[in-house]
Image (tube, rainbow, N blue to C red; front, top):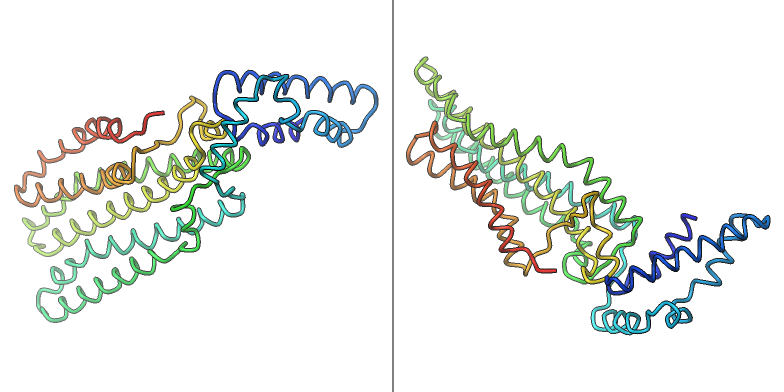
Length: 322
C-alpha cells in the first residue's frame, strides 16, 4: 500500500491545493485501497495487486471527468508550462546538505577568526610587531576560509537560482533531519547569547593584575558565539530552502508542513529573505557596538529580549502571503 500511496502523491503533486483536489485525492485513494484489498483477498501477490491498481487508476487524464479534476489538470498544465521545475532526487538533497554543512563550518570559522584577531596584539604586548604580524596572519586565514567556503557547493547553484521541486519521501527525510538538528540549533543560539551577555566578566581579571587576559578572553568568547550563530543559522536556512522549493499553491507545497501544519517561512522577495537571514548577525553587531561604546554590559543585555520580540514583527512583514 505504501507504493500505491507514493504513486498517488506523485500523481497529485502538481495539482492546485484546493478543497476539490483534496477531496478527489481522498476518493481515488479509497478506490485504490478497495481494489488492492479485493485483489489480495482473491489470492494475488502484493506486487501483482499494486501493479493492477496502478494500471487501472494510474492515469488522471482518464479519471479527470469522474473525479471532477478537468479544470485542475488544465491549471496544473499551465503552471508546469509557465514555470517548469527540476525535480531534486534524494541523493542530490543529501549532497547539497553535506556541502552546506561544510560551507557553514568554513565561513563561520573564518568570521570567528576575524573577531578574535585582536587577541594576538593584546596578549603579545611586549612584542608589538609579532602581535601585529600574527593578527594579519589570522585575518588572512579567515579571508581564505571565507573565500574557499563560498565556492563549496557551487555545483548546486541551480537549487538557489532555478525553480525546483521535491517529492514526498524527500520532504519527509528533510523534516526528520531538521527535527534532529533543531535541538542543536537551539543550544547554539542559547550558548551564543549567554557568551555575549557574560563576555565582559573576564575583564575582572584586570583588577587582579592580569591586564591582558581579560580582554583576550572577552574577544574569544565573542568569537565563539559568532561562530555558533553563523554555523547553525546557515544550516537551518539550508533546510528551509529545500523544504520551501515546491510551489506553495500545489499539493506538493504541503509536503513541508510539520506535525502542527507549519511550513518553512516563504519570503516576499530576495530582499525580505536577506533581512530575515541577517537579523541575528545585525543584532549581535548592534549589541557589541553599543556595549563597547558605553561599557554598560550589565544593561545592554536587554537588547536580546527586545530583539526576540521585534523579530516576530520583522518576520511577519517579510513573509509572503499564501
